[in-house]
Length: 213
Figure 1 (cartoon, rainbow, N blue to C red):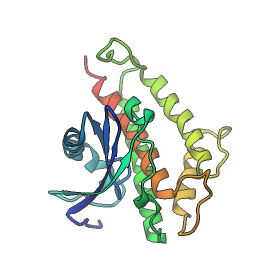
Figure 2 (figure 1 turned 90 degrees about the vertical axis):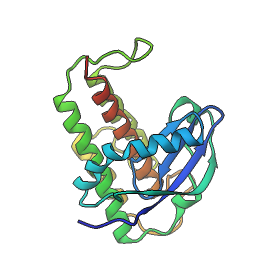
Figure 3 (figure 1 turned 120 degrees about the vertical axis):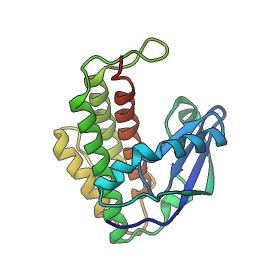
Figure 4 (figure 1 turned 30 degrees about the vertical axis):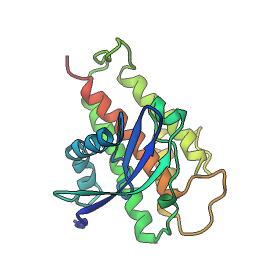
């Protein structure tokens, strides 16, 4: 198992009403709050849920992480709606083969986490705070549909593929990525991994939270 440095680089995406704190090198470890302090606190609290994902990827999360805010980016309507949508400069860093394998492993571990949660969750979930929310199968379908759209940002056409094949294509695209220019219409692989894993785990944890009466 590969150890991790204690310092964790964090990107803050600051909207008018919501802020996202994302661990730049740990795809999926991303939480939001009403302001910077709330977002950082939520990120810290999420470490215990994220740690098993890291273990499944063959890595190790720092035992007592120290957050280092390395970049602030301007949020927009998507940020305030509830999705981290801004590409940071740090997402455009050079990518080695080892970096790419690591990113892909964390994305794949996020999928495994969602599959485990969905397999053990009831079909009908407890309603959300306003009496709404998708049930289990609808959430999983939503994740699938979103990933088909996300894949297009990596230059992939996977809408007609079944889930295992689609995931394999996405993971292969991330793992095979190298440093170099990225077309304007495409996501840098670091950001793609961050966005995909966040969406998967956000809904996996939603299913967990709403599985109790």
